[in-house]
Image (cartoon, rainbow, N blue to C red; front, side, top):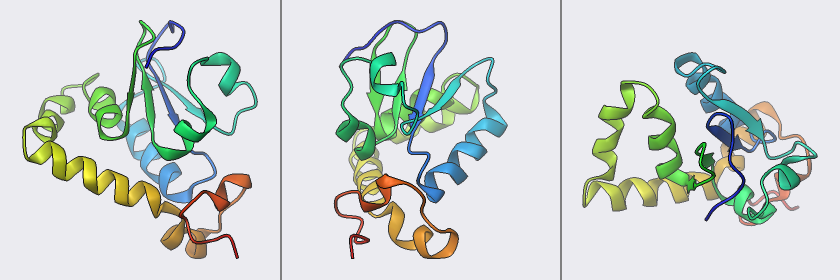
Length: 138
């Protein structure tokens, strides 16, 4: 997947998701705005700013957009973001055969269920709270 070139890497996350916001704050403590731009998929211009990336794709996983416009999603996006700092070297272990499959599977499970536990504790805001599979459509 590819989109437009960026002046610096960008991480797109679900700003309606309390779980996602909490982890982005942790990433922001390590990676500063000078190194990585953090954007919520809830921003009105997000789809026009990043053509070629669908809203559904953004709902399904975290997206890292490199300066050349290349896109990494899910666990690969996390590793790419952390690789901007020395801490990324340790996170690359998650890309080794065997661990890659396990970390990707864990990411998919967490992403699919991210609203279930956090919704009731902190409250989910916005239209993305009814994301497919979140179990909050009632």
